[in-house]
Image (cartoon, rainbow, N blue to C red):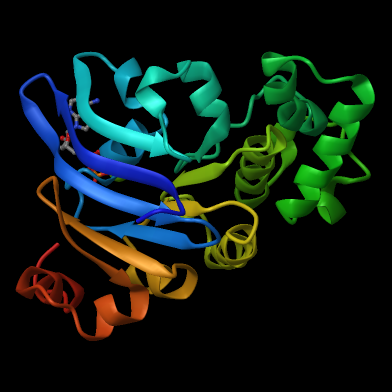
Length: 251
Ligand SMILES: Nc1ncnc2c1ncn2[C@@H]1O[C@H](COP(=O)(O)OP(=O)(O)O)[C@@H](O)[C@H]1O
Ligand SMILES: [Mg+2]
């Protein structure tokens, strides 16, 4: 469909002989959060890692197919630039342990270069605000990121991803290592963030998908089984396989 921010066509991905993603076509519109659900090992992480070309950095990994960002081919572009435009947040908050809170958020800006001191300051503050962390850290920006709680560290990673002004945000089970209160904060955040940047979130938690996502895609054994508005997918799935999964018959 035209107007989609990110369009995936016939994507396949392998690790050696393991065919982890099998001919998936899926589009992601602006201003929406899309959840990717499915049992462990069905290719959710591999799929989203192909979208910003992180997949290819792993041993024996390769992919085929098209990924278009605003119509232009991600696989014909500079991978570093693609990883800036399509940001990623991982399951475990991967804060840079030797850096301050401020330093963590500024890191990507310094890496990509071209920002003045004042611009960096402004973007760090804006990003911490967008990540709903500013009020908790504004008095201690120069302290180590490691003294933050797990939930705060994850919001710091979100701020770091936002600082470089991505056009799409990928999140791979961003709350699965967090307590329920931190999880709720991350979910609220996703709900707000999708208005400025489309969010693609992998989750094995169906309630979470129902809470945060406008659309949900169900993957099974490397294939896309069904994608639909979240409510439709959970209340009246068209595929038997989807129904079995969401009613807890496997997975
Ligand atoms: N780094 C890797 N090397 C080899 N095989 C992998 C690697 N990562 C994942 N796989 C395999 O690829 C398939 C899909 O895995 P993954 O994308 O991690 O699934 P999910 O995120 O849905 O749990 C699985 O069979 C898994 O064992
Ligand atoms: Mg995974």
